[in-house]
Structures are given as C-alpha cells and as structure tokens.
Length: 368
Ligand SMILES: NC(=O)c1ccc[n+]([C@@H]2O[C@H](COP(=O)([O-])OP(=O)(O)OC[C@H]3O[C@@H](n4cnc5c(N)ncnc54)[C@H](O)[C@@H]3O)[C@@H](O)[C@H]2O)c1
Image 1 (cartoon, helix red, strand yellow):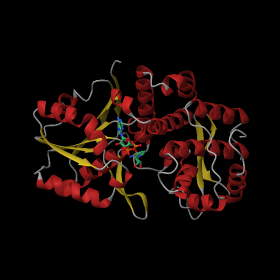
Image 2: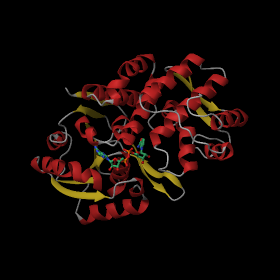
Image 3: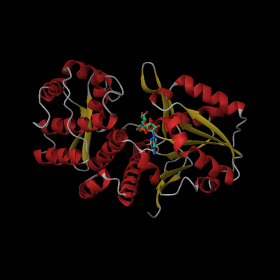
Image 4: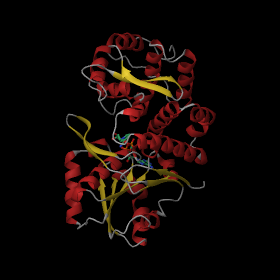
C-alpha cells in the first residue's frame, strides 16, 4: 500500500494526515520533522500498549526522543476528568516542558483524552495522533475536538486542539475486533452519504472489500473520510454550520445508546440505525425519496450494519433526543439527507418523530 497524504487546513494549525502501512515504525522519524521536542509523553491504553507500545516507543527513542510511556486502562471509563488530572500530574512529574510533545497511540478514547491533556498542560503543548481503530482514523483523529466525559454526560468537558501530525497506520487494523470494525464502517457510510454520489458510489462498489478489510481499499476509505472531514472542518472549525452534518445518524444513535445504557448497543450499530431512521424522517418530511432510503439500507446491511431489533419505548427515546446537543429550546433538530451529498439540519416536529419511533419500535427486523 502506497502512502496517501491529506493536508488539513485549519487557521491555527495546518497538518498532514498520512495513511499507509509501516508508519508506526517510522513514527520517530516522521515526528522529528514536525517537532524539536526533547521529551515525548506516549499515551496509550492497556490493550494497545501490549499490541504496539514497544514498537512505537523504540521508534521514538531511535529518533532521539526521551520517551515517557503512559498507559491507561482500555475503555471509555478512562476518558474521565480524574484520569486526565492524573495524566497532567504525570507529565509534570516527568518534567515535560512547553516545547515537548504528547503522542496519542490508540482509538478515540486515547486520542480525546491525550489531546485534552495536551491542550491543558502548560496551557497547551504540541500533540500528535497515531490512531489504531478505524473509527479514530476516519473520524476522531481529524477535526481537533478533544475532551473527557463527565458524570452528567459524554464529552462535556474539552478543548479544541489540532495535532501537528496524524499517522494512520492501517496495518494496525487487522487485530481490531469485529464490533469495533463495524463502528468505524458506520462512520465511513455516514461520510459517504453526506459527501455525495462519488464517494457513495465508490463505497457501494467496495463494500465487500471493506468488510473483508482489503488493505488498499481500507487505506482509500480512510483517505476519503479524512478528506471529507477535513473539508467540513476547515469551513467550520468550531462547530455549528456545515460541521453539523457530521452528526448525521447520531441524534437517534446517541438516544439508543443512552436509553439502553452506554456499551450495550455498539456505537456503530446505533449510528447506522440512526441513519436509517433519519432517512425515513427525511422522506416523510418531503426531501428524500424511497430509492434513497432503500439504497442506504442496502449499503448499511452490506457493511454488516443490519437493522436493530430493539423494542425501546418511544417516550424514552424522544426524551433522550431532546437532550441532544443540537436541540434548541426543547425542539429536536436532526441532520436530514435529501439525497447523496445534499442535507439540511433543522427542527423536526416531535409528533413526526414520535410517529416514526412508534412505527420503528413495533416493526420486526427484516420488515423495514
Ligand atoms: N474527537 C472526535 O471528533 C470524536 C469523534 C468520534 C468519536 N470520538 C470518541 O471516540 C471514542 C471511541 O473511539 P474508539 O471507537 O476508537 O474506541 P476505543 O478508543 O475505546 O477503542 C476501542 C477498543 O479497541 C481497542 N483497540 C484499539 N486499537 C486496537 C487495535 N488496533 N487492535 C485491537 N484492539 C484495539 C482499544 O483498546 C479499545 O478497547 C469515544 O469516546 C467517542 O466519544 C471522538
């Protein structure tokens, strides 16, 4: 697989996302090109540490960095205020200075956590990402959002922090469990539908290559997603406006995760269900046509994202959707697809949503 590079242009920090294989081994050398740091805090999780920790640590040391290895327990619970606080203390104890560097090695949890630590330590030191999950490569490592969860909810404390460099080594993805793989694929599908016909057509053509993790097609999917997200983000770095499209499928998706208890329904499965739902709401409110809804259904199923057979109370889902961050003055707002590449975000009448939720929760799998 040859190397693919996407240049992300945001006002405060432009950077490259490099997609390819063998990048972990080259990490020291590549980071040297963008950093004069003496010390590097290499932040990872327990799972990723055992898979790739030594390899990256050796690569960084080989490029003259003094490496401070830090590992947190794998899982969303590490993306917390107390863990961020203890990492900040560790950085101080290790003597990291203003010109030093924080490197995140892992999935979105580690990326969000380490990015937040880099954004706050000494009011901000340099940061780089080595994403090792498909979701982190196609979504969370691009765009500069970092943060931790609070008791009151996910991602409630954070900062915008752009990385100096992102190295997406796709050879790390072979060990990713199936559920995590599909979570990434849901974001790929979201990106393709919102980006437009060209990407969507490509994804339909290569859906089987992606479920079988064919290396060159995986790299191409990552490149397309990064390019898509970087276009969106460079037009709207700090949220609102065009960036809202990234929430496609997430209004109901998050509600499903919340109502069933986080971790019960995989994130990707919830987002895919949210996309199916949003397309149906879009059809009912006049924008999307039946062919589009069917086309998206077929694509999601081919990617292994089958319809969920969950009987959830519409009232609970509706309440959870009202708590969505896009909601304004109690009105639920959703990203609705009119057609591939054409979307709008606006308030949707609660009665319309309730009617759809009721139909959705009483329909068996396969009937939709
Ligand atoms: N900042 C953003 O813009 C943004 C966007 C989307 C999601 N997120 C955040 O990302 C997080 C989810 O990220 P995630 O799905 O990557 O989860 P994750 O970081 O928890 O990784 C999932 C699991 O896979 C393991 N893992 C990682 N790489 C592996 C590999 N190569 N082989 C085998 N196992 C591996 C991890 O140890 C973990 O157990 C959430 O907290 C979410 O809020 C952030």
